[in-house]
Length: 459
Image: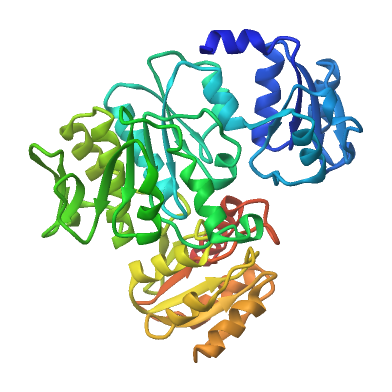
């Protein structure tokens, strides 16, 4: 069924959209425009939602189950799940048992458009890599939308796209749990380290969800994947796509790699130099990996080396990812609020290398903080903690012999304590190793609050 046929098939189809976050609301808008008979469900009650949104749903004859669930799940033809919705909720299981089709917003977006997809996943580096790929695609003159976890919901752009459109999508394991036909032209898995185990329970289940990004690809499509990450690279064992590895550690006969300080692409016929590592504006070994992945994605999507090189050299990085925020009394301040898991924070510590005052804590997502603790002694001078799971991080740190630990109740107090501790040449680093949900709506809100606190000190 092509995109037009699928759009037409949605007319009068009974669809329950589950989860009223950004993705769920976007799915409702698109489905309404295509003539579906929509119901909406969310664990929150209507009084906790935006009144204008509720009024719009009423005007569009959307049935609402807010703080409630439908009594008969077999009444629906399809469920569209938002990424934050666990797929094993009892009423979703009831729908599954009744034979109701269950998809996610990403799958819906794929089915309704003839556009082309690039899909980038992995535990860390997704936002930087996706943003850079989007910039390279735009510089090449292609009709490009950066979507998914950054930018607009995928479905919002998909409904407006055509066969010449490219959706460059940052996709999470949550989104990939609910795909069935989704098949990008180029997929990428950047790395695989523990994250979201409160949802996936095991690393095997987490990896399986990530591998869905290339599950439907054939040899005509490409998978860009990290050769240096054994757990990540093992995911591609049964992949049918053309595998394009990238490596910071070894020279490759095919793929993208670092060679004597040069970022290089080998397409099997010729070597193409992208740039020197020292020419990159973004710091850290992890960002060399991100750039190698981005360059490979773009090259195997058909973009010329000069466009890739020019864009890579000019790329300043993204907000909330080891973002330089200023200097106070000789100490530099960095916002890495997007460091929402242990591995991300370890990467940030390695990037800054020494004289670090680390700010950590928040919603730990059932992680083991041992690895973070083992990277404190040496590069980290002091650690200032906040948030719900600060005691868990402190316990792990003390077991590793790190004792320069301070606890504060909120971000204002944390930044003030860092200011008191910092000396000339120090690096104050917000890299929480935790999600923000115990104190903030998102990591973006947390990062901006940190920057606001730093600005107050600069006055």
